[in-house]
Image (tube, rainbow, N blue to C red):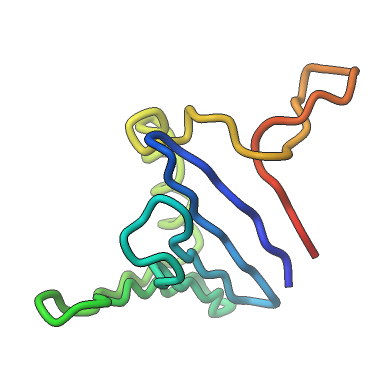
Length: 111
């Protein structure tokens, strides 16, 4: 299993865990219910099924099914909103692509 830690303002931390054809986003520091699953995504071999559990009694679970082309198009479209989605914050531990001095900001990955 690979675990990646993402931070965003204001001090929210999400953990992405992935193994085989599955990935999940788990809420961590800064959220009211750390440890809660936010999204579970499965590669079906034909595309993806993303499951968003409600985690409460007032909302329903939500599913999103996409083939590979639709998923790619969605990622491209959402990349336009990366700042609004919190991806402008440094992610812990990722190698800066333009620095040779080993500077790390971004994503922290653990096996």
